[in-house]
Length: 291
Ligand code: SF4
Image 1 (spheres, protein in one colour):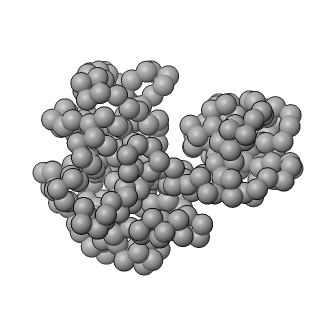
Image 2 (cartoon, rainbow, N blue to C red; image 1 turned 120 degrees about the vertical axis):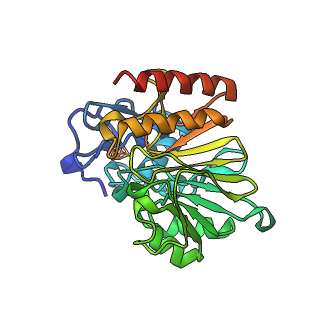
């Protein structure tokens, strides 16, 4: 719970506020940009919600905030924010909300499919919050959990125990040590089912994977994201823990695939045509070679 006593002085006066426990994960700014803004190394409220839509988005940000750093002075029905998750992005792909602090607020996703199409899939782990778990259960549970890399595993053990899901991760990020059910090795793409491919992309970590669903949705973990500031696809040079050279080489592998959505753990979601995303990916690779 956010504390009024820790309210950042940079917030505009009024109901919603961010306190000093903010870790600057960007989730609130992406969910409710009308209310939250970047203030250097933290988010602040730059504009108080003025209508039901803005209030709902601000309450969703409050629920998603991994550190409970968003508070309100007035009472609100918490279910307005809670019940909004999982939130559909497109088709049968959802953003889970309830970001986990242990993965620095990384975003996680849910694919909802009938059992005969492979069943539901969690991509990276949200916070194990009872309200979210019940919603996922009501949507059919999760038979598979895809883990892009070791930083974003969060509460995977609890989700696996709840839903008996098969977890998939790369050996080079410690999948065996964690006792995961399916361990991917080497650098070849791995077909999980007819609609899902795991693509090893070493760089951010040695065993980083991205997952491509229906040649449309690319779940990119910390490998690739959209930057509104650069108006381009980017990789995170200052958060590359293994090898930037390898990450640049891995990025070139993605030119072989079509996708319309980039769905990262950190950084911004982006949607465009496959041709435009391929062009943006080429620009990103060229830029990576210069830094
Ligand atoms: S979601 Fe929470 S931790 Fe993340 S930037 Fe906003 S206030 Fe800070």
